[in-house]
Amino acid sequence: MSDAADDILTKPLGVGGKAARLRAGLRPTTAIAGVSALALGLLAGTVALTGDPRGGEPRASATIEIREASAPAPTARVAEVAPAGPSRSAREVEQASGVSVFRPDGSTAPDAPVIIRVPNTAQVKLAPAPDPRLTERGRHGPLPRIGEGRLRPLDVYARPEEPGTGPRIAVLVSGLGIGEAATMGAIARLPAAVSLALSPYGGDLEKTAARAREAGHEILLQLPMEPFDYPDSDPGPQTLLASGRPGENLDRVAWAMSRFPGFVAAVNFMGAKLMSEAAALEPILKELSARGLGFVDDGTAPRSGVAGLAPKVKLASARAEAVIDAVARPDAIDAELARLETLARQKGFVLASASASPLTIDRLSRWSRDLEARGVRLVPVSVVLRQNAGVAKVSSATP
Image 1 (tube, rainbow, N blue to C red):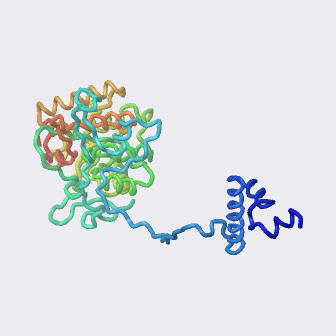
Image 2 (tube, rainbow, N blue to C red; image 1 turned 135 degrees about the vertical axis):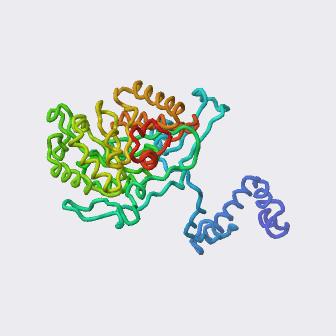
Image 3 (tube, rainbow, N blue to C red; image 1 turned 180 degrees about the vertical axis):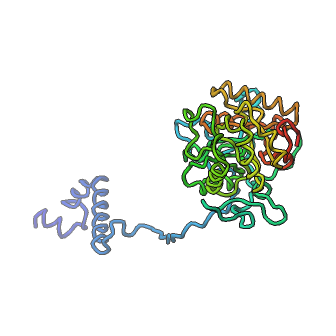
């Protein structure tokens, strides 16, 4: 038998011959490749059976439950401020919110002491208007009147004076109700203790008056009166004329009074000529007194006869000692406001008037921010009217 046959029949399997050669030819890489092929085969089988390429791997599952967000707990709000855009300064944001920040000597250092004043959320509420007890029907519409027990609109519709001590200033801003933007700006930016006078020529005056009173401002009615250079300077079609018949002037007064409810007094619009003519002025002041109203002379007429006639007709009246924006420049307005403070400290009380120009509103708003910190209080105009009925020179008194 040949060697080949002996190899097959007489030698143990795997010893010598071809088996030895095969075994000698095996290498570690070959074994690893075999194992890898086996693993791939098993993986392919698993994917074929489960359809999951990650089949066989450890896994965990979790259930995600979507719930509606619960409402946050209510928090105290100091003020609502629109987001400050790139063009709005920090001072403009303070001004819009009503929050005042006082920095001593203009300091901006982080460690410099500051005083922050937050608007009082418990603001003074004015009595509802119109009050049916104080209203009667006239030819042009509802008119104010004195109610039972001598109850006057001046008393009911006035803003109460808040408790406090020290010198006081009353400021009356006139000319509102014509431009909506300017009017709403004045209502929002000026302190509530500043009294506002509405022109009878404005549109939707009932709504404007209601907004002003809701913000805490007491309101007055502007009466258009004849100036010396009339008609070059024209207060409007319902102007009270020095040469007008009493009945005609009183009808125009009634028209103006029917335009909106809730005012405590009237104030002149122009009127230097009419207020210098006692015969024409007296019936008008008498009518205001008979209806439980007051009258404010805004201080622009050099020869006003109001102070002399008020005691005669038992009218609550006052004359402004200062016209804040007689010179309509920022520096001049600021100087007049500083003078007001000096007068208030000297006399205890001072009454001033101003127009509703944007410049004036801006300077008044800035000036009033830290007025209380300087020891001076703002009070409504009705304070002097209610406590000094018929006094000839009320503005220089200390109510």
